[in-house]
Image 1: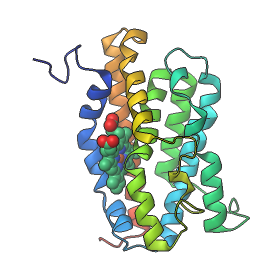
Image 2: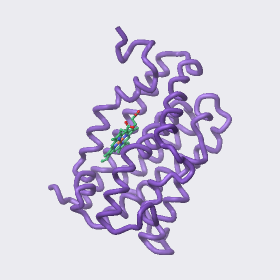
Image 3: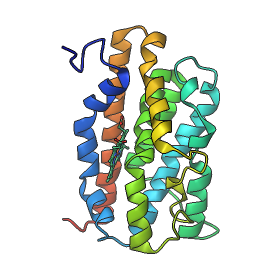
Image 4: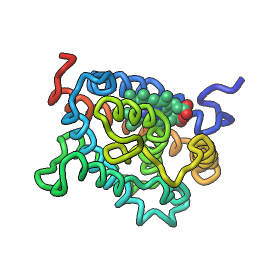
Length: 225
Ligand code: HEM
């Protein structure tokens, strides 16, 4: 029988299964529930988008040096890049001087610092963070976009929700299949099973870092309390 820990289980399945509980926790955090339930104002959505900007800056600044890396390099694809889209959204949400006064929450700062550290020192860890964010954006992110458009009146796929729109990916399901194939190929590049387990642990940590950001956002916008 193939169990989630069997070497025969594809790595994409291992990492998805192992982080399932953490995914549910992030998805059902009170901030996310309130936000997606339409119970929070656009100021909460803006504050959340600001946090994403710090995280994606770390992800995408870190990507530069990893392009040729045998483990992380294949995952780095220009059509995934989100910083430009986030900046357009922030200009729409905060105005032309959107950078003025922009500061990360402590949990965001810790999250971005960890991503940057992985990018500098541990390509396998970077892949774990890359997976956690970009595959999520291609999946549940589409639900968030629809809710945000309805709740705060953004144009469909327009300014305010560009972060969720991948112009360069015409078929997200096919793209995700390709991404999972890359994950499955990790076994050949990262032969050490212990190292692959460390990557899975880093993915769980990445979810926990997201949940910590939601917690601090929930403290700032405490509707469910
Ligand atoms: C309310 C918020 C969220 C909703 C509604 C949501 C929903 C979903 C759904 C429906 C899928 C499955 C898509 C598929 O099978 O193709 C998915 C996958 C995923 N989500 Fe979320 N999600 C949310 C939050 C998050 C967060 C905060 C993260 C991490 C930062 C995340 C990371 C992921 C990842 C990595 C996958 C891909 C799993 C895989 O197939 O390997 N999600 N999400």
